[in-house]
Image (cartoon, rainbow, N blue to C red):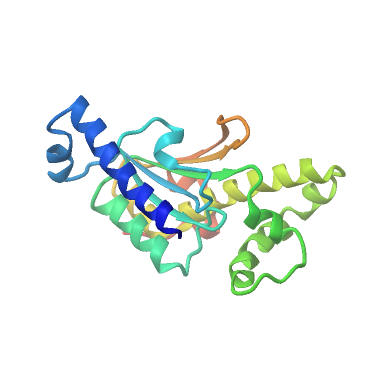
Length: 213
């Protein structure tokens, strides 16, 4: 990071604070009182996909977790900790898994190049390709196949959320919780609602339904 850029982002922070206080002198005092966001956003770490800005949300309205290719991995304690806090403490009512067209993680998973440590993470995406191989291999146009794989990956992560004991416990306790899958178009700014929405254990295959008392 250059000295000029570093100074610029500090100046940007001061300007942002001034703009917020100009609209509401009590803005930061209200934020400091705590958070009650209705939404958990699980998205890609890509710098072009800012959760709050995409949906026009203000600070305090969205609890956010981001990683490479918006994955829900059952051994990822970081993701599980965020999910547990969002569901059991913040009591969010909606969780959105948002992928994006042009996702580098998904694109890399479609090929055979080794890119280092991330190879191990991308294996989870390759498994998703394997589960949907017939549909994806039938698509001849590579860009169309890429876009469809991005969509399928987002939908698969919604299912992975529903399979967690955290979400199933919430549903078993009668907690209102809706899971959704989206894909964001970086070139358009528009969200594609994949129309995969789950809100109970009944939406899962029986083998994944935990017997929670």
